[in-house]
Length: 102
Image (cartoon, rainbow, N blue to C red; front, side, top):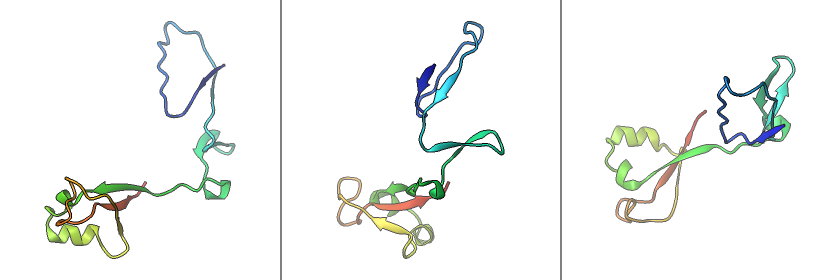
C-alpha cells in the first residue's frame, strides 16, 4: 500500500512498475457509488468550504478604469484588508479581497 495525500502528485513509469494499489486519504473526498467516482464532500457531508478570494492591492486597482472598479467593487462585493504597505499606500486605500467562483 502506498499512502499519498491529495496535494502531491505521483508519477510512475509504467514500463518499470508492476500494477500497484494506491489508497488516497483525503477526508474532503468521498466515493459516489452511483458513478463509481471520488467526489468532493459538500456542506451536507460536513465540509463547509470557505470562499476563495483574491487580494488586489490598491496600487493595482487604482490604475483600473473607473467602470472596471465599479464592477469589481460593488457594495457588499469586497472586503478591505490590512496592512497598508508599499503596494497599498494609505493615500490609495487598503488592499481589497473579492471572491473567486469555482
